[in-house]
Image 1 (cartoon, helix red, strand yellow):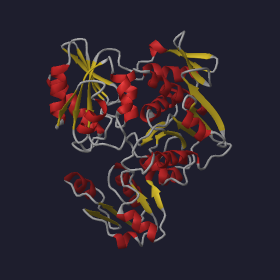
Image 2 (cartoon, rainbow, N blue to C red; image 1 turned 180 degrees about the vertical axis):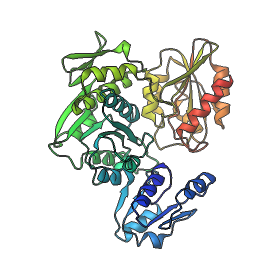
Image 3 (tube, helix red, strand yellow; image 1 turned 120 degrees about the vertical axis):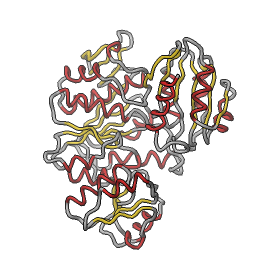
Image 4 (cartoon, helix red, strand yellow; image 1 turned 90 degrees about the horizontal axis):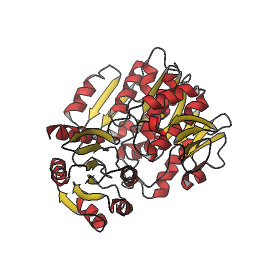
Amino acid sequence: MVGLARSGLAVTRWLAAQGVSTYASDAADTAALREAAATLAQPHVTVELGRHDLARIGRAAAVIVSPGVPPEAPPLAAARAAGIEILAELDLAATVLRRTRLIVVTGTNGKSTTTALVGEALQAAGWRAAVAGNIGRPLISLALEEDPPEWAAVEASSFQLHDAPHLRPAIGVLTNLAPDHLDRYPTVAAYYDDKRRLFRNASPAATWVWNGDDATVRAMAGGVAGRHRQFRLEQPADAWYEEEGGWLMLGDARLLRRADFPLLGRHNVANALAAALAADAAGVPREAIAGALRGFRGLPHRLELVGEVRGVRWINDSKATNVSSTLVALQAMERPFVLIAGGRHKGEPYTPLGPRLEGGCRAIVAYGEARLLIVADLAAYAPVETVERFDAAVARAAALARAGDAVLLSPACSSYDQFANYEERGARFGRLVEGL
């Protein structure tokens, strides 16, 4: 097992439960990892932190990789040189969970919300269902349950799909495609190639749900074996938005009024339509789907309203770790706003945000490693101020915002310059707002 974050720990626990001799290693050596490693102590499990024993990896029967480990990392290079199969946790889990039907959701943006909505709809129907994958809970953890669920809604990242040759979803969902992760992929085409792996085991028995408004998605899904169902915002489809009447539609049937769906933004209407189609394909009654959408309150760190302080609305969109996610957040803004952006640069230009900033954006506070790149790309569209530290960015945004404004944390960057992950960044934002 290479990498001992959440999925690596879960895999090692499952392998240990099967009595499999396992070597688990991580290049990092932190107090949190040492604490986690102590829980794995068993005679046939060896854990090593701070290094990888490449010779030992080269003698393994198989290598399971955490999604955060890049393909060129030395332990994976050693495995490839020895001709050893490299698998993602997702692939191992899909192989083991033979009686659990998988609804696998991927795409650049909207994966987590769509996955959570699918899970809500399955559970609203009274079915035994879990939500797992990149959304937080490793899929392999379901295999440790005495009676795994009938269904699982699974968020899959491109990193996970890269090493999932056996994955065979009952229902697959592709939300949208836009450039991302160019700090890891050499080209956009390479990133899209990993997304395409969702379809690699396509068969006539599968159902594919995809975004008919996205030309890149249409080209990727076209000709794939199986049943195809499209969702669209711009014209009628299998699921669509009737803007004139304000209805979310399933075919010719009204599913839910837009006013009754609590999430902000047109992009979340698209997420709701994708989830509705996937749940409908699984056989969930439409009344249960509508109820799940109506009762959904959103996920943390995704256009999450943290609070209102002295007439200023504070919105946590820390999950926006790429430019296209931030663009979606800007499209949802209905009042003047101050944007907090920055963190670790991921290789994309920020200029696509420019036209959405003009007029509505009072100022940008750019922080972290990417701050000077943000200035270079966006200073022509809105005033930009720079600070190094995240806390200072929040304080400066508070000083710039006026009553009736919003402060939007939508970084367009990864969190890894100052935080362990986007959740930690969003939680820090929430505490700072509470302090106001």
